[in-house]
Length: 156
Image (tube, rainbow, N blue to C red; front, side, top):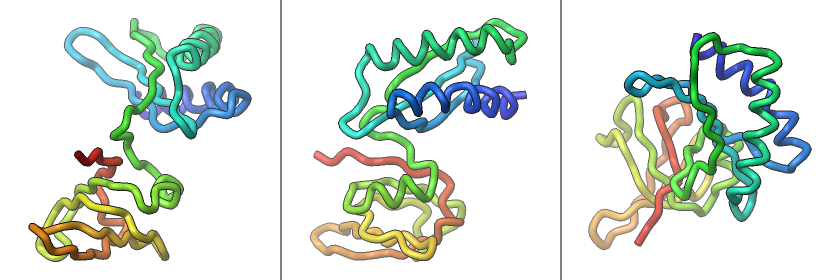
């Protein structure tokens, strides 16, 4: 049911985001405790502000009320994905060349199941990440198919 809810929500929210020049980052339909949450994460270059989230929430809420795809009570949340936004698609990786990222892998590459470093290239479905081990800079090539999760990573 969760995948059907997210699919229907995506169909409803994409036209709203398109007319506002916003990007859909992710949709989650989850149960936390006794409550269910439908979370829609949106973004644009420079980030989104609270008024944009509010406008999208109002319009999406109306569409969800009209189509009524969720039979149980839930909370709708529309927000920014934050500075450590997930990277969900190949396009996300292409847009974030030279950004610091964190990737978790399904299986080890060069003996490791996770890497954090600068995404240097994304060519032919292979990421090249430059990372540090103490003072040495190393690179690793990771096939896109081996990525379980990825996100932007903040460095201090």
